[in-house]
Length: 126
Length: 394
Image 1 (cartoon, each protein chain N blue to C red):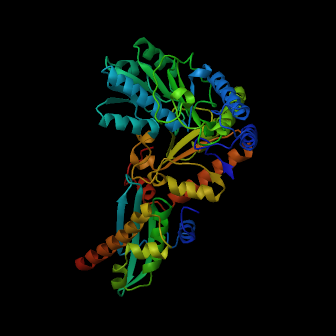
Image 2: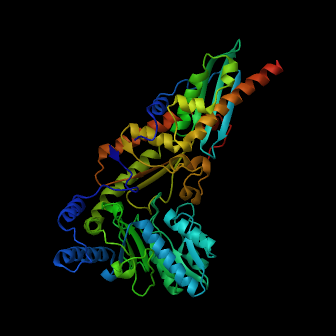
Image 3: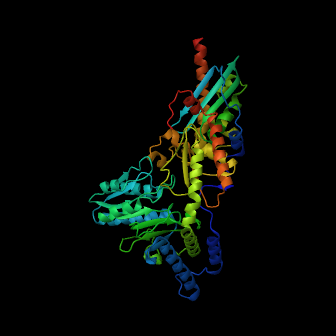
């Protein structure tokens, strides 16, 4: 049996929404290079909807796949819904992750939370 | 598939396969049985012992067959410690980049009150014999230092270390799992008291290895039971595995010069090719390493992703990244030579086999370049490095 599910490998090989949003209004970065995982999420939110989302990830196969899947799960969704994204939902959508890789899905959830928090603080400053 | 993970395991040689299959079919007797059919197996076993001994310059009665390198390491170290304890000597000298079969055994002894000195292996991944000598104390019962490192391939000054140990009357063990069958090893010339080796690293089968114990050096059994291996290793001997390993070793040792002549330029070509990747570095000394080993760090990327994408391109290699080990820390070997976590995660080990072609070599270089560039393309670490928000380490 392969290390990862077909879904994980698909998102790893062909990551969705990879890159940068130049005029993002919410940016979050979590993890650190020392541990071998960094995820950066860029959000473009308009009228309470996540109009666009992109990511950059330094990390293993499941970290890249988790980032990719997380962006798919929130793209086009209301902010309220994006806020409710859980790591379990990311892992489930990938048809599961090995136990010792579950932290990658946690990181994806945290990256989105962090980007949403950045968005909110920018709104408050307005 | 281009298989360049020969430090993990090797393909069995045709001679090894033939020996193995012939024996499991035709010579299944128990070497401890007195009838002729059992004694035939015993003859095979003793011929294998002579062949293995000859390959490393030992005497047949100095060879104990084991289940592999890890068992041999455990047995050598635990035996030396037991003897040390009886003599009131509870200090062991080793290095920070040993295989876990050695390091974890030393950790166990530490909990039992032993003091362990782990020597620095320097940036080039080579221990200094003078530093070994300086670390030896009145109560040192063992020096255990690997012959060639399993990750970065660096070759240690075993002969000089052995000399120092002889001078101070300290038992010297070497984990030679990556050396035997790959470079010339002679236990007499190299002043070795105990040596561990593993069959599947030199085209023999898995699950079989051996421990050389110089005559006069004390050794205890780890496994209680029958009187096999002169009471030093109980359990019915793995006759097909042992004879198959001996066949592979005989072949590898006879072929050492050709092996070195073929792989050294290949290794150096790959090192040169990968050196063209910016912000990358070779791990371990460029010349004093086994002919088969290339180990590189690439800044801004993570090793597991690199391996998976190389696998997609039909290349099977290995990495010292944490994600490939299931732990949070990257390779202890890379940390021991001073690589910081950030770059140690982005390592690649290519360990060559003799069947590699020039075409393969160019394809590997091209593929690694492509994959590193691709992964850097969406790495936030690389973005920060390029933007000057983070300092390059390599």
